[in-house]
Length: 256
Ligand SMILES: C[S@@+](CC[C@H](N)C(=O)[O-])C[C@H]1O[C@@H](n2cnc3c(N)ncnc32)[C@H](O)[C@@H]1O
Image (cartoon, rainbow, N blue to C red; front, side, top):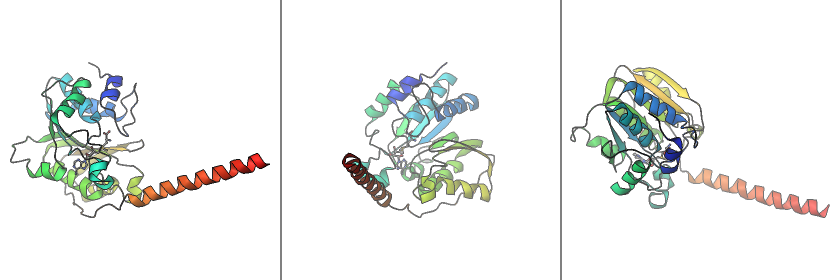
């Protein structure tokens, strides 16, 4: 059984997944965990173009059992603003869009159920929908501290123990500016107990794999992240200054 890396990257490209057309990057870990743990219920919160749901669903297909729940409200920067979108670009507006991407990546129908809901809306209806416990989860939705802590608390409350949780953006540099809060959530979870083991994998975003043997206490923080406007102005400003310096240097050189 194999996953076609090139197909995955063209149909469901990853964002900061350390992947290329010949290497799944973090996807290797997603696939291996599904194959080895043989989860009956996988939960993925957030995906730009379907990379992680596709890779994990293919693992379930190759296992011959298991279902995947995919939660993403299909946020988009142009519609919802860059702060709310968290990198989303409206890829999951209709069931047809979801099916098209997954089928293109080789995932048969009936494995993935998509909920076009925010994390809050989804977990508020979890028990009423009679959803099963979670065996393996990937948290990759809204990365600010309030949402990351909410996701980890909501997932671990429904985890079949012992259970495994992956958190994307675990060591991303934006954690240091306060625009992401994943590393703060992980630091607190380590101090507060219940988190039995944790390992982080390197990369632009960083990926943490957590193992819970008992139900942890996860504090849900409500502080919103700082605006992305200021860093955007900063980057634009540096670009403008560099361009002016370049033009000036070129003219100087020509004159010399
Ligand atoms: C940028 S993507 C994650 C990228 C990911 N690393 C990948 O490879 O696709 C983040 C996703 O989170 C979704 N999202 C934003 N706010 C959310 C929320 N409150 N609950 C769940 N998902 C959310 C967005 O719609 C977006 O698709």
